[in-house]
Amino acid sequence: MIKVEEVQYARQFYQFFDEYYHAEILEKIRKGDNFLQVDFGKLAAFEPELADDLLERPDEVIQNAELAFHEFDLGNIARFKVRFVNLPSTQRTMISNIRSLHINKFLLIEGIVRQKSDVRPQVVSARFECPQCGNIIPILQLENTFREPSRCSCGRKGKFVLLGKELVDAQKLVLEEAHESMEGGEQPKRISVFLKDDLVSPLSEKRSAPGTKVRVLGIVKEVPITLNSHGTKSVRFDLQIEANNVEAIDETFYDLVISKEEEVVIKKLGEDQRILHKLAGSIAPSVYGYE
Image (cartoon, rainbow, N blue to C red):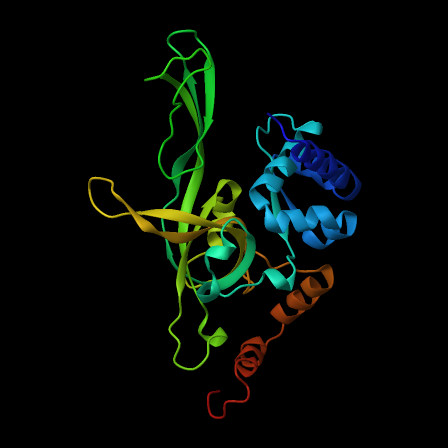
């Protein structure tokens, strides 16, 4: 049954997108991009209560924000993702300070990428057919284990026929706290970050290479810990961040935008006979004797 709040969220987001991002959405659709970066500050100015709900119930609110995109003509784009930027400073949390009270909350963390897995497909939804009545049962795959329906509306229990599954690209990062943000002899803490869809595109991958300092906006999730090969689960859980957006803090060449004025200066420097001497003098000029 659809909740009244969900219908309200979708309606509010459609009004928000239509007012602030209509032209940008149309341009994204024209280019074939399936995501939109949304400024949290604009959302808070448009509807403060909706912005507060996003921080407290991000899964529910983001899901309905993406449903609102279907009011636009998406063409061949099946799913349109919303990526938030500019979260308030109150949501900034150090990895070592993440606790159980943060589970399912929308946080901002910063750190250095220490490990990065290969991109692999992950199931996000599956469709099953009931052998008895032919009913089609869609199941969202939100957990780490593949879920099948337990029963059909006709009352049948047992095995169901898998008709198909929807896959997306997925990847895992290990993020470590930056040393400059720590005090005394503290050891940097690490946390796993889960990426999918456009966040693992070739360009996004280059911005999150190991050694890169990044800013992650995401939802804290609990992950069951398996104790042995028989699948026995521990009473303790691990924590993981499901990323909504990843931004490189250190500017890379992929983010560099050169203006027309800068282009003129660069070409003029290229014609300078003493350009190598000037470049050498621009590198650590305060260090004596390294000319």
